[in-house]
Image 1: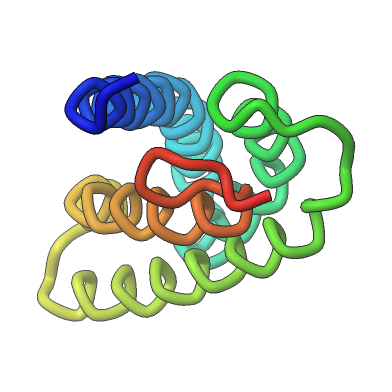
Image 2 (image 1 turned 180 degrees about the vertical axis):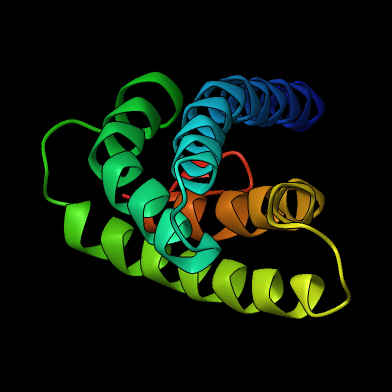
Length: 138
């Protein structure tokens, strides 16, 4: 296989993995945002709703990412995934607090933050799942 062909194949695999990550992310984000919104609408403070969203989503999201995006089997990467998830949560919680301090409501604030959370998730979760720039790190 020529170097040019390998590069083209590498780019297609990277693109497909990113598209799968985004598709799974849409489902995971919708699920998580619904949990957050329901909790806020039920009277939970926004930070508590965010904790609930992250806790309920962690195991589900791990399995979705492992199976459908990164082709990882088993639970060996779960501790690192939870660590990445906690970093994402901490950044999200801080951003939520800062955006809401500008007078933006809890639901709109979280919606505005989501693109940054998705980008951070791609970088961190991809790393802990053994994926970097179209190649497995295993």
